[in-house]
Amino acid sequence: MPDKLSEIMAWKRSQLAPRVRPVSESELSRADSALPRPPPFERSLRRADGLLAVIAEIKRRSPSAGDIRPGASAPAQAAAYGKAGADALSVLTDERYFGGSLDDLRAVAAGSPLPRLRKDFFVHPLQVLEARQAGASAVLIIVRALSDPEIELVHGAVRAAGLEALFEVHDEPEVERAVRHGARMIGVNNRDLALFRTDLGISERLIPRFPKEALAVSESGIASGADARRVRDAGARAVLVGEALMRSDDPAALITAFRAPL
Image 1 (tube, rainbow, N blue to C red):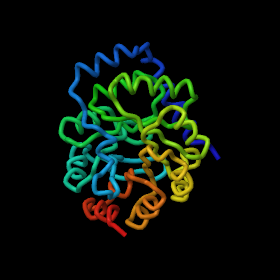
Image 2: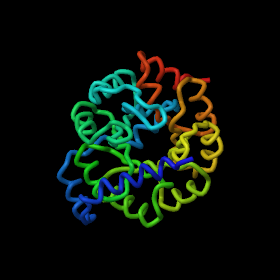
Image 3: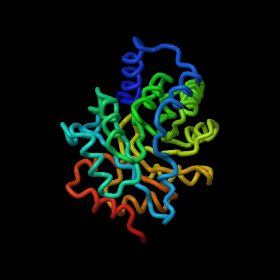
Image 4: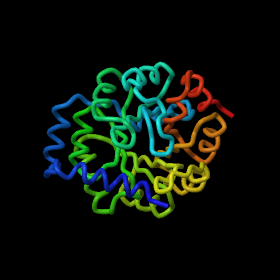
């Protein structure tokens, strides 16, 4: 069976190659100083009431689900999520596989006060610079997709740009790598990006291995209050939900279900 993540990463690297140029930490720092400060991402997820935080994702399609909500307006969806009580937003900016763009992030940043994760496949500091310029608060680092030197390069760029990083993991060795690279937020993707199978048991297995100070996020496959309770019981402080919220006619009711106490 083909490895979908490898396919996506190969495409991302080839797409980026004609534009790659050196991006120094000083250039990233200058951009950070010149731009308005984005709302903090991690702080928004550490809810004082102890309830599960919700990162609501704007996603028109995916390789696993196909079309989810084609033609959806990113700023309108962000506004709906804000009204529904989301704590933060995730904006897909990959066009080929997910139907997103940096213009979506720019439009969302212009109209929403919520913190924003640029959800994409990061391989180079240039993407981090673009994320900062487009109004991101944080970016995604997929541990499986990068070598340790690449993680160090991208994470250094994230820090220089004044952004935050959500490290995404899928197994125990990746948790160890994320911790070695100083991850403050670690997300478990319950969907294996190689084979696109989903299993909430991955969060249940991995989150107890996180350092206590790391903020644990469970990503993918969460569609009900029962799903949210499973990952919360495993130690998740936040969930990242895309497909279920994009398909929902009542995102506020779904977010309320995710947060419902035992």
